[in-house]
Amino acid sequence: MTPANAKDRPSRATEGFFGRRHGKTIRPQQAIALESGLREYRLDLTAEVPADLRTLFKAEVSALQLEIGFGGGEHLLHRAKEAPGTGFIGVEPFVNGMAKMMTALAKAPLGNLRVYDDDATRLLDWLPSASLDGIDLLYPDPWPKKKHWKRRFVGAANLGRFARVLKPGGRFRFASDIDSYVNWTLLACRAHGAFEWQAGEAADWHRPYEGWPGTRYEAKAIREGRRPAYLTFIRR
Image 1 (cartoon, rainbow, N blue to C red):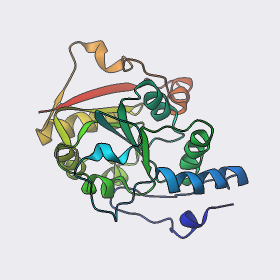
Image 2: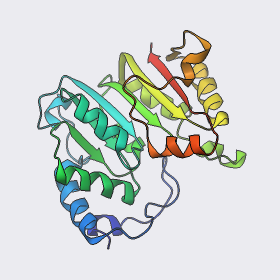
Image 3: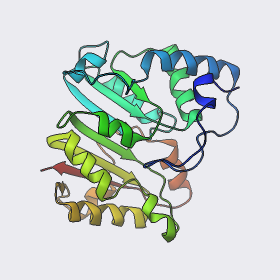
Image 4: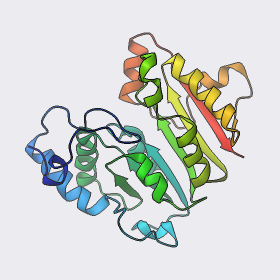
């Protein structure tokens, strides 16, 4: 069962998202939660951008965070519950992941969370300049084949988008278990110039973030013998 607003979107490549938008068929209860949840939590990018993004949230918030590609939502839900005074925006174009998130929110609603279920570049282009305190990109698709590296979300164009929407001093956090993508991100951020890597000692980039709850992708990587890296960059 697929909700009406999702089945009309084809599986197509966009500027920042490639591949399938659907996995296995979601259960009827999930489809109901997805459809009703998106009506309540989804950002409408056809609407005028509010002068104060804090008004997008039902709760009173003082800071704004973005998570791109939240998967099943474990990390995003954990952070939103842990920091009720921060407004969180989560992006996930994969229907099955969004269905899990909306099912969780149906059971425990949150007033400091909004979502977007399409290409993250569209949301980044919609957001005002210097409007975010942080961006998380956690275990993104690594596109391991060299011919597909141009599809990786981290690149000059998207780092430019990050630099525009992050406040000076804002944080970009990147986690991955794929060494080539970690190196790619370090080199891309150094080349861009707007980001300063925060690492005081050699062990820093293998130390999980403070309060890190873990994710299912991370657990799988560890089971398979890959060591995750956790990078933090500050917007200059």
